[in-house]
Image (cartoon, rainbow, N blue to C red; front, side, top):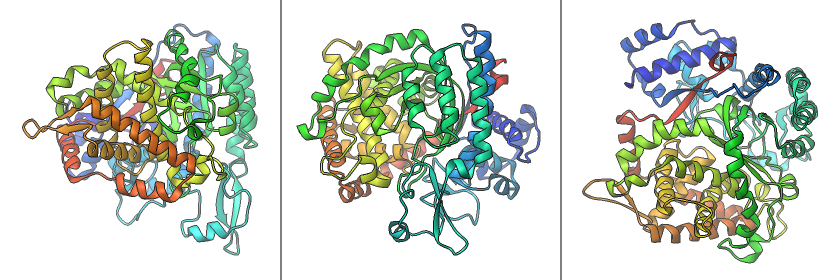
Length: 556
């Protein structure tokens, strides 16, 4: 597929979704867009060619009629969450779209939920827009950190409040469920409609409680119910969940939704790994005080096909695995669920990771690239979120509140490293098959895939911190002859343990200043690495995927 055909398909997908959101974008079919793009010029094509399309489908033959009826209802609920994330990330979606003349730029704005390129450090791609506010739309754009700190209000750090100005110009908090009362009522009604069709009692209970949570912002009971359901084949993750969008403090949750179909056979194979968490926690390469907490006993692993996603999880780079709930109390008392999005993962492996390996990995290690290793690395990254520590050891509260806007980046870095630690430990216990080098080389190759997302996101910062730290420790080297990378396994493992110890210690100490210095020193892309990343772009290797999705894609 040529670089021109990729954005042609992409635009068909994006424009299709735009029609549903009532944004005025011309109704053109696939062939119209192909003819139009081949004659157009300018930077818009370069922007769109960062993405390659992928259709979200799955085998629905094993689902009951009621389950098939539930899916369109859950998709409708998800579309509302998509609009709410637009408000989180930018504000008035329709005003922005109607101000853009180029259909291509409109399409790119839809991918990014605003006028800032999420794969380029949130650089604006529309003239006159200015820098993206670190606090997105959760806080007044003119609010300083000093004003926030002096604002005496118990709700200001809540996951579920916006900060706004009153008529006198002072700060006030507005809860999510009050701000979007009508929208939340609509989503709640749709979830109750789906619950009436649910044949699985656990799913019925969860949908009922989640419907209530959306109208009250009290999500803990539904989080517990979500962990309690085990045998459901249809799943939906919906609500304000992750805090990555708030890069000012990391306090505010972003609206999103996934509609999922569980792969029952794959999930059964993965179930055994959760049993090893307590022992793996004890063996972490850090002092005892930083591993004194015990992972929840109800942690589980499941594999899914994602059939619809909306909001935060669809913005820019696409999610391939989930670890939820984020509530520290729920995690410690109950555990978490790790969801591996198998179809999205396979798309990124085939369309992106394999071509990157061909371009950047030394031929002597190229055979170590495998989907099994990519799947396992991703899975154990999510499992590893449950290891380590959730609360500081010196009375500074939770790690998330102590480290503020840096908490997410450090947590993602921890999960990457401890995921590798788990693989090594389980491999030594003969619980994981295959060559250990497969996991390391595939992991390193995936770092090149992920750093192309830039360093504006928590994942991007985590990847660059690890890349630069590993480079300093000699964990990999670049051949002066072939200009390709080769992993030094022994030094790779040593760097893995050293950086794990450092991150776990910073988290346990709640050392905000230390983390800020560490991020500033390490979370940057060198000129040499940027040249390699540019080469990947010149070779036509996409940075990420964009979804064509909905009832039509599923044949419903």
